[in-house]
Length: 331
Image 1 (tube, rainbow, N blue to C red):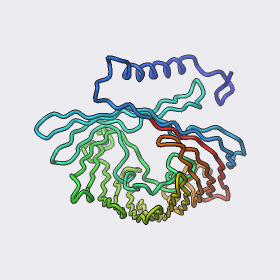
Image 2: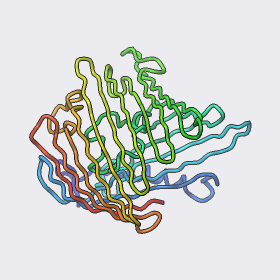
Image 3: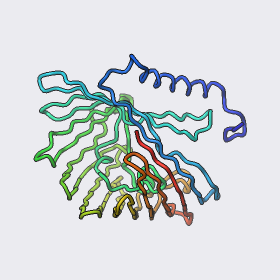
Image 4: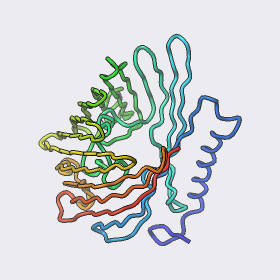
């Protein structure tokens, strides 16, 4: 029987609570309960990897943001459409007592000639501005290990303009603080905004967060990319300001597809850990990170992949190394 970190069996109530949540989700998909316009979707992504971290080296099985969700839309007339999504992260490798069902993007909104309005929980405009830059998203090489700004927040109120010439759009997010005692009692106690251009071959985005990572912490992100045939190169620059501290981050990613195989290379360097230091230095963001990967498609919905990632922990001599093989299936 597996035990928790303290060596004791997991509390029965924790497993029962997880079962109840799973049952509630399953009920949504039961025949006669799900409206015809709902789309059930998901992704399972699991890796077997060698992890060499400051705490030690081990072989482990990891779920990488596996998920399940429902989404859909409903025409309302007069050019209006209701849209909605409920998405949860699931962990097929979790211990029985772990909380392995976590909320991801969950919202309801309206689309019309004015653009799109959403309310709920969602990735910020700055996070979305990365576009396809992060080739190792949700894996050990995810850019969140080096850069701040990779936030998904509740109290999300967003408006996205209609696309100009089917390529240029603006997104603005407002986050009410809901804390009158601290003076955060308005609709825009934190904000995130981005302007994006998405053409056939060219991608460009400029985004800015205000107070999203904490009071007085502002982040600006610039992303650009260009695709030539089977190859795509993307570059990222980021600056985070927190009073007396101003730190920069840089990154580049390159993907090259040949047949059913895609080779990937990504490098990041940043001093953002100085702005947001952890209580334990070994928990700091990384100063740099290099990732190499190879994906092989086995069909439209399934792929096998492998990667190697190495990074150095900010302000220490410690490093993290990961070598992994994995399987991903979407539905």
